[in-house]
Image 1 (cartoon, rainbow, N blue to C red):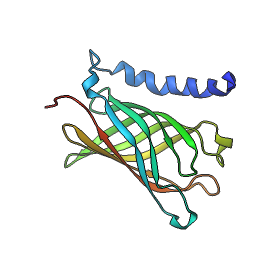
Image 2 (cartoon, helix red, strand yellow):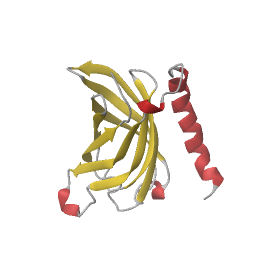
Image 3 (cartoon, rainbow, N blue to C red):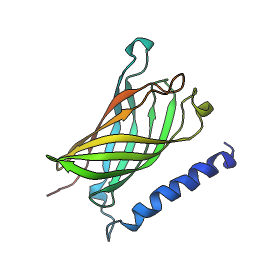
Length: 162
């Protein structure tokens, strides 16, 4: 892989993550890491034979009540491997559901930037219990490039939580 291809992504990732890292908790707590097995995509255009079960491995770590860093890999709707890196910003809460957006980058979509990294901002809602949680995101359709969907990402964190 060409190192220059990663330079814009690396720079963007640092620009996104540094403000969040500045808000990080005083000490790293591994028990606060959320782990997910990918997600399920309910595509708006169900007649295209897209892959709805987007299995993979992802991680999410809370920096505060509002900010979380995230990263992972999954098999996308085009049946290709994708990676992501981002920052959840969840400033609103209503009846225990947090609302905001995830800001970051994705790769692996052959019809969008030839599979190279691209930026994205996706509206998201998060429901979290002590050990189990669910992220629900809206992915817009980008004609002839990305297939729109509502995604459901189940997540789990180990350890005891109050």
